[in-house]
Each structure stands twice: as C-alpha cells, then as structure tokens.
Image (tube, rainbow, N blue to C red; front, side, top):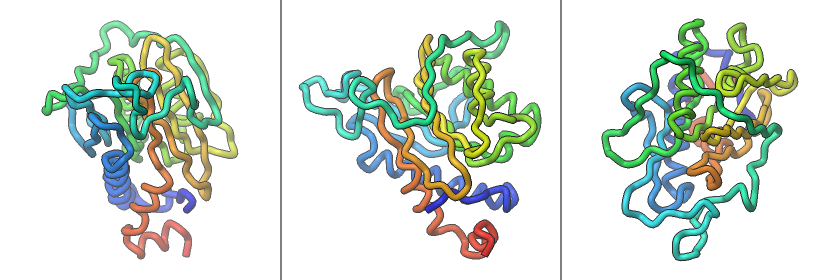
Length: 252
C-alpha cells in the first residue's frame, strides 16, 4: 500500500490516523518486534517531552549484548547489529554531535515505571510545523533527546514547507551536527533513524506519495537495532480509517 497525501485533509482528521498508526507500531514492537526485556508504550508523556512511542528496558532481564547475542551466547530475538547488517537506507552519515547552546534547557526524560528509557519514535504532525515556535521547539527537543543518549526514529509523512525546506531531518541534523542535508526533490517525505552518542549516526530514507514504506531501524544501543515495520503497521491503521475520508485522501 502506498503512503497517501495527508495534506488533502485537515489536521484533526489526520490526528485520528496518527493515533491508530502509533498504536499499531507499538503493538508490532510488543509482539515479536523487540527482544526479551524490552517493551513499547504508545503516547506516553515524560516530564518534558511527549513522544509517540517509548521503548523501555525492564531491569533484571538478560539483555542482548551490543553484538546482538544474549549473555548466554544465543541470538537476541528480533535484533540486528551494525556489525553484521547495516540498516537499508538511501543516506547514511556519521558526525560529531555539537552540544546544545549554553543556557538551553536540558531534557530530563523519565518514565513513571522507573524502567530505563532507551529509544523513542516520533511521528510528525501538522502541528509540529504550524508555527516557527512549534517547529523550533520540536527540533530542539529532538536534539535534546539525542543529547540525553536516547536513540530516535522520526517519521515525517508531510512534505517540506517554508520552515523545513529540506524536511524535518535536515533541521535536526543541522542543529545537532552543523552539517547540511539536501532533500531529494523526487522523494520529499523523510524517515530518519538516529544513533545517539558523542558521534551521531543517522540512516535516512526518503519516499514520495504513492511509495511503499520501508522498514526503519530503531536502535536499542549503539550497535543493536530492530526494524519497525512501517508498511505493515500503516496498512493496519489504514484498514480501519473511515471510508469517507479514505475516499477524500485517495481522490476517489
């Protein structure tokens, strides 16, 4: 199923699909997508940041090593490693992360369960681009997540606008590394996986309306990742979306 043109409907209509897709991703991660000891929660609020999906690690459970194997030497279920298989991406880059400007409020990200937060998924909404303040806040918080050592997956199903002429990833990457990113004109929707650390690594895929969605890596540590099935979860959310609005979005 191709990704659709969500600019055809108002933000409130998209918000319903946004929620369905978020829960579909969390379900996929919890049913075989994550190795033992990890779990995902959808639309969970933290102290200063409200990401769409949190990936947490339960204490006291044997975890995979960075090479993708558990402590007893068996493979970590659902995981892959950069050592053995790099994520499929149109663009890959690694740069030194630039600390956020002095005086900028740092993110204190905690969860009420006291389980360790390791990664976040952010599904961009029109509200994130609705004003200069909203967009600047989104980009700064994304960089704050990375500075806090948390891995991040950003999914942007909306084309670039005046505040993000090269897409959301370009703005995040520039603030985090001071390096540019040029969005290809033929594929204006961006999907970006980030590996947090003093050296920041990103794996970026770009798609256009009408393209199938690729799986995207969600990192659990600097080497280990799982693939989030974006296409399958998008289809699950689309199947229950109201038929009246499906007709508007598809132009039928």
